[in-house]
Every structure is written in C-alpha cells, then in structure tokens.
Image 1 (cartoon, rainbow, N blue to C red):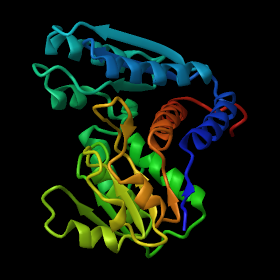
Image 2: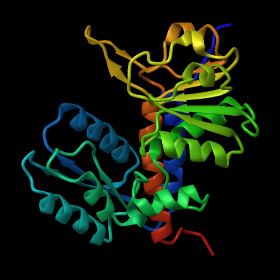
Image 3: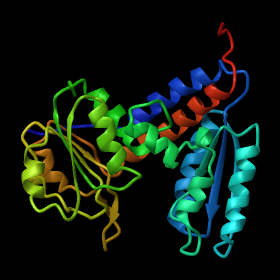
Image 4: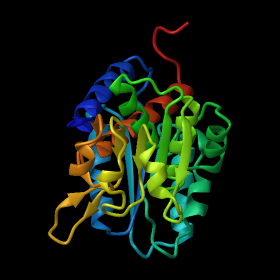
Length: 285
C-alpha cells in the first residue's frame, strides 16, 4: 500500500476561491488586523503568508508591528484599538510573544467576536459545549482535509497526539463533534504506541521530529501530520516517520504542503465568518 497524498496547497486554493466568491456578496470587505511583536524571522514569514492570502481575497488589512522591547501595555493597547475599529472583523496576534508579555493577557484582551485564531477562553468554552463560535484554524483545516477524503468519520477511532490549546485539545473536540471516538494523547502517555496502532484517524501535533514512527501506523489509516521541524541539514520534516507511514496508511499529509496552507485558508474563512456576523449580506432578506 502507498498512501494517497492529502495536498493541502490544492485544497487551500479551492477554499480561498470559494471565500473570494462569498466575499463579493458582502456589503463591505472583511477586515483583518495582525499584531506582530518582535523580529522573529519565522513569525515574520508566517505573517507574510497570511497577509498575502488576505490580499488575494481583497480583505482590508491593518498590520501593527511592535519592537521586541514593546511593553505588555503597548501590545494590549494595539489589540484593544483593533477591537474598537469598525473596519476590522478579525484580530490575529502572531505567537509566540516575547517572554515579558503575557500570552494569556493578550489573548484575553481580544474581542471574542473578532478572535479569528479561536484562542479566547470564551471561544474555547463554546467549542467544548459544541456551540457555534470561532474555532482554531489548524484543527479546522484538518477537519476540512478529512472531509475531502470522502471517508466516513462517524464511529471512527481517532487519536490525537499533542494537547496544546492551539491544536490538540480543540482537535479532539472537533473529532468528537463529528461522532468519532477521540483519544487525546501526549508525551507522558505510557502506552502511546498502542493508542497509535488502533487509530483509524491519526493527528499528530507534538512538535518533535519523528516522535511517532511510521511503523506504528495502522494499515489503511488517515495520517494528518501537523508538525513541522527543521533538521540540522536544513530540511523540514513532520512529527511522523513519513516513508514508513506512507507504506501503511490510506491517506497522509506531506510536510511541508499539508496542514500549513489549510491553516491560512481557515484563518481567512474565520475572518469572513466574523465579518458576515457583523454586516448584512447583499441580496439577503
């Protein structure tokens, strides 16, 4: 067996085209505000990818770039100003923040109605109860990729490796909401191999290169590798041993080119959704 590749770039292009058509029906263009603190090259690169996608869709953009030494009060003031801006529907604070700035304080300051990263405690609470809200972009992108396999999710054994608030925990909630039997594992799970071996759907977001050997993958499983790690030789790899996993799985995401593009596409979808809630749709009753 050789797994079929879940091409995140192609899927993201399709999603963005759908969003562009929908955005044309709005009374005004959706607006995205981006906050970047510091000079981390990876963060700056991620922001460029996100603002490029927003420009492609014709979204209004506000980018606020603060120095590495900006105080927490400075960051909070920018977040609150974007919250008060009527032209901005979504606020993205690029993580990580400098050590002296409280991540929780900044995320808590985002208006939940504009929380397009889905990280505000109120949005997390709505997700835990299965109520409508803004959902973290990476898990949302994973669900879109799973949908595109055409495989039934109801009743499937799903295993998530990694329990971050950004990916692992909301991922398990979304899989539960799709009627999977979802198990959330992490680096302290004593029987990790046993859990992975029974997974029909395996989502790995542990942030450690090759932490799940491909030989553990169940025959015919769907493998979603969220991890992206740079090796000493400069190459990128995921959290799953790709070649061995591809020989066993039915579907697998590449790294790069799998989950990453879908995360950006879902950020654009969340921004559009937040905008729709705040303005009329042309032609709507």
